[in-house]
Length: 308
Image (cartoon, rainbow, N blue to C red; front, side):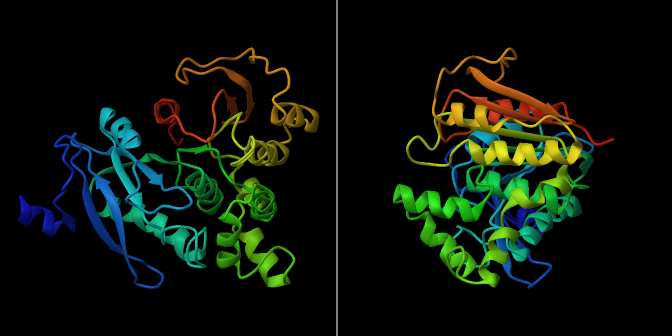
């Protein structure tokens, strides 16, 4: 068994859970040749199987705790891969750089080269910084994804910088390290901020099925405010010529004023939905919760998505 894993580029898992069947795999970047680790769990069924790409949060790497997402993938017999894409967002090579974007696509190619993958059912998802990257990848390679599930995403880095300063959150220092300075420091810095912010590229993903989610209590008072997710949804809706979420409603939700359940509720969340909007194949869900993800709801939505 060990020899077979070596031939496939896999390393035997040291996970105490024998059912996890996790392996660390290493791939070479097609841009700079750097060796990048990933957590990988192959599907066991015969024939082409769907692939779930999980993207790690802001301060983490490929080996962050993704067991709930892994469990959902195993329950559906999907391939699962969690790439490193240059690790925590604390240096220029990370945080939606060209290298990081290519790492995610290289991870998809890695699985496709070694296993049968259903090309009509390749999904990507994540929470926080992983959701930020998931939306970036939706715009970067819209032709790849059958579904993109983003939970509590940062969508505008310049705005997030100021929010972090106001909250006394150290994440603003990470943005400076990534982009070479604070917003307004130079034209180059502002260009980097815009390039790495999914908000300004969402029109390219207007035809991609997007599952944009945010806990209504996130950012109250610390974290990532729901406005980030709503802005991304509005950018898609605007590109499609659909109705956008009004500023007055955004302000009311952010202030937690008169939270009223939406007429649409979704049992897969197990939470109250305060806002559910639809634009083409994409949806926005503001739910009762904080800075968190609901992998079961995400994968239930993905499962019903398939590229034409």
